[in-house]
Length: 83
Image 1 (cartoon, one colour):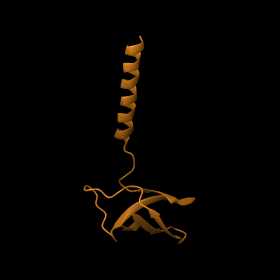
Image 2 (image 1 turned 90 degrees about the horizontal axis):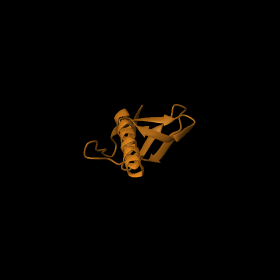
Image 3 (image 1 turned 90 degrees about the vertical axis):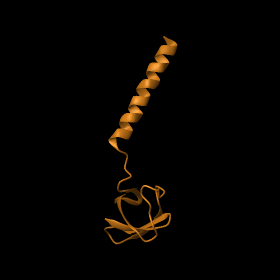
Image 4 (image 1 turned 45 degrees about the horizontal axis):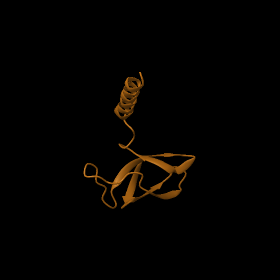
């Protein structure tokens, strides 16, 4: 669904016709700048449309993999200190 950004706020219309305006969950960046009035894709929870994710800003699988690897190294380091 295409939506419009207004600075640090997003304005969008839900499927049932409600107009929502919420603060952006992520700031604009050099990689993905958001100019006022630009269109972005959002995914929102139909039961609570204030909860949304900007398309392209979801957590990637590699981010979870890196967090898991960090936990493994932390446990290995702790086991070396203890044992």
